[in-house]
Length: 527
Image 1 (tube, rainbow, N blue to C red):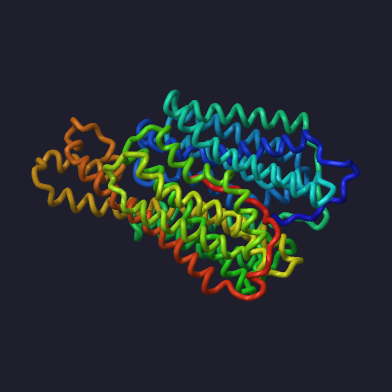
Image 2: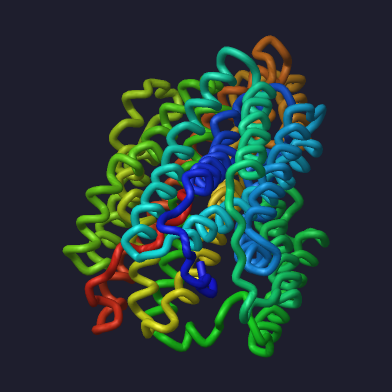
């Protein structure tokens, strides 16, 4: 992300304590981000979320990361990165405790939002602290590689943690474990990390931060609540209007800001603008896929968190093992080549996933489609920043990297929101139609099913006891949900394919194709 370099430190190398503190912090933040996705089935079973409430569990964490990450980077430069590293870990710890003690869905949202606030501080601060403590480019490259490996390790460990604790303990114990790790991270940072800051030329863009925060929240609210409340309902329409107004105000604020959160003049570069679109749409595709897989295995098929974790190991767990290959490809080929291949693999995996029967509970059926998506993501996530950075002049590379991070995180946040809206909307329409014409359903069963559907949506109907009156309609809910999330996979596949075609056809010219250095590695998302 963009930052003003610190003066070269006098010490010969990065202190081990700082490296350990930074790596532990980023591993913790990634675990906190990715772990809850394996527990969606348990959330549905124990907290009984209705309509779009399940989607908000994921986005309550992702939204603060997407909106506040760049501002936390500036705060670290201004007030000291060690302080922010400790504070971020404590915030994440507090959020996990709130989530672990949740008695209802709203408290779980609050815990996730608080933990996401802490993660938003940890991601940029841990990297900046490590980069600031290295006196040479070669040492910095090695230290950042260790940081990136720690981040990848978090993506690998998160589904295992959620799967094991959710299967043999409870979903609450998963949050407790993360809270303990967060407390340990704060202690390590307090005792071992060396402080650094770089306040020269740095200032907070308060107007930009407020307007984009409100604008993105309003947009996500409208997209997520549309299928439940109705696209023409007053809250949804008002949210869309607020989103348009505040995003327009954000543009106006950025054009006037002395130190803007997002440099809008970068988008005058056609190649960068196209790369930015690919960052949003491509990462939307990946996280939408991960979210659809988590709902299919958990709330729809009621499989255990440990079996759900298998899917996330295919999606996230391949990245650390493929990083050496990706690095070599980025050194030998134009960045758009692995980017195109990665997006095409994601599209192929999604289209295959859409063909899976909702009654197919065999984990082996997931290996090919989700494995393709996982390999595609490993190639894509490292290539996006390289592609965007190499479309602009060298002196704007840092700002381009930061802008790409913001846009990519926004794509991550859109994934669960849009796919949840599309899938649940399609499922609700299909199950309502099926119930109206279902042969063999008594009037009592049909009426009870409609009541559950009205109050909780298709996921709630799919979870009612089989022996109850609505239970007679569970098969229709299962079929409708399978249909809805299959469409969700198709939407993700189309988004990835569109991005791949955009890279091939529009990202041409010297700026888009010249050889690249190893790009900044950014956190892979959840799901």
